[in-house]
Length: 571
Image (cartoon, rainbow, N blue to C red; front, side, top):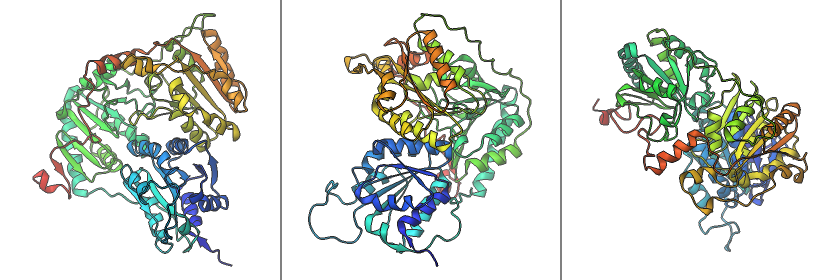
């Protein structure tokens, strides 16, 4: 007997086919039919402590799995999750936000609960941050709208918003037809040819000064690490990565020159960028942090910048050119070169821990390297954690995740939940400041409820360290929590306190020997113990020099080339 389908069941099946295995969310009246449908599917529902955290968890899941999803109710759920989805949109993370809604059919008068006075307020809010947003109005058209939204999410690597009215959710619809495939984004052949030809000319002009590849996070989004390394080797180029793209290419590679963060970072990667005859920025969002605020002044005449759908060469922009197509064609056409620069220095040996010596931030990150293995997923929250983790050597195979552009503090702990579900064979290691931890600490209970192993290092300096570095004031101080006890409060093993070097080594041993457990380590640091990078960051901001010099994914305003821009390019 043929199965009958509802719209909710249809959406659940299509999410499965898109690659989603777990959906994070909070049940609520207008999304309950969809929760029922997921319960009858292969999807596993992971209920988080609130809707914002569901969005962060879906984001972390997608960064590891390739796509993630959340489900919440109308307005009170959807608007709460909006901030997380905005971060996914800004950082090009494919997350599907399914938000319930009142019945699409006209209902009698009376004020509806969860309302803000405007029926489409939720959809309007999402359309402000998500390009791919649909409101399902009837069961007949719902399958085609669902398919299109999911296909665009997979193809563009950006979020989708689907508003699902409760009556449409329960209504019968057609069965899924065929597989779900990403929406194809085919490069404009004329623009692609022109961009590659122009880029090759720029590379040849670099001559003896050589080429430096600036590797960005979209290399990970589009799975291009192998192709980009092939291009690096063909060119004989050095490469640097941005904070956002930490470990997107293996740091053991002979061409790796370090982390690019302008004058905020080390001299060698800065010289690799500043001294290059051509800088080939691949998949970099070229945000202010990617460029070390205004301290990485890349001469536009030396720049080739390829983002997900456009390429900039010098001051000319070629629209309608995909990053995968550009990398593939450039790898074929680029002149062969030979690497002359020496490989990056090996990681310095770590001095042994000294009993009773108080921990410093520098020593914490030196010693914590020991627990990062090839299968680790390292998550760094906004603040000194992300800057310090970016400077840590990590082995090939390790993944580093951070929200270094949208920079919403508190992201890391629920994102750790998502990462733990995305690949149970890889243990997440979260590095989070105490201010960020206080925002989303309750998601420890979700990890414990589902028995997911993870290590969470809470960097306790009794306040907002980054804000103290930028601007002093009593508003930066936090009420002290007994962080180590929280894991026990939520039903797990009590956490550990590390105030000295030997206490940290003991805690790291626990992390290493109990990989299937949640281990929380409270790391006690001085209230102003900041990394050198954060100190320089603060100096630049206080001096009023924190302005980015390039924008729009490497394609700021300028002459363009492509079918939609021929007139403005003067072509």
